[in-house]
Image 1 (cartoon, rainbow, N blue to C red):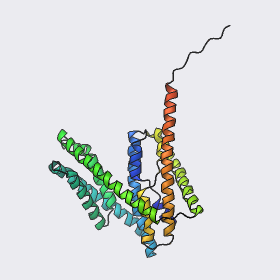
Image 2: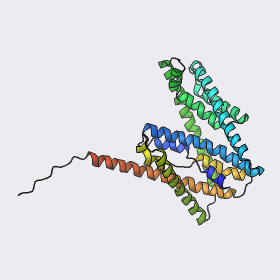
Image 3: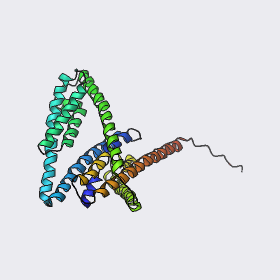
Image 4: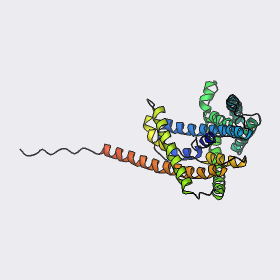
Length: 301
């Protein structure tokens, strides 16, 4: 149960991270690192949590089998994403002139997700690889010795804009529905439970502080350490995973949901307040650095 608890709260929320990095001062490499980290950890949390739940339900703790199962999910998900992504990259140049081509692209993603899950792969990883291929179409086409004309650029920008608009609307509806649902079923009636959730959030902050400082040593994103430390918000993935123990009839299912709500709220406050404080400090430092130095008056002899 401890491993399940850790896997549920082990990753930051990709939706919140993407929103935050667009509003704070951070380098492009730092922003990309945070976004990729949140996307990958979401997938890891889902795959590992489901694997641990399977072990708890079946009562068979075959470590080798679990590792093979996780590796299979990742490899199949990546393979499906690569095949589907490259196939659609070339097909999109033919169908992108159609109205609502971005909806067709979304349909292909859903089809790939379902196909990947049906053969035992990770649908989320398939969708991520698919998106990475479409998002880096210029570099990929050049690497494949294909021409990347202005027409290609306009096509991809049109599809990308449509997907972003539609995706934001769907994400808003899903987040709103699920967090309302979570608020209905949660019951934080114990002060100890509340304090435990807050304490866990600050433990996560401390661990992230150490991890960021170690991994960014001698790195070009070293200057982004502070903002990367506070962006630890847990969100929709943690909320959804916290409800799984109840669905499988596991013990302590109420504890998972109640702790999840406290952790999500506390980490959101830490990220919001922390990013504002860091931005204010940087502005003050920049202002003081730019102040002209006044000449000293010579004292009368």
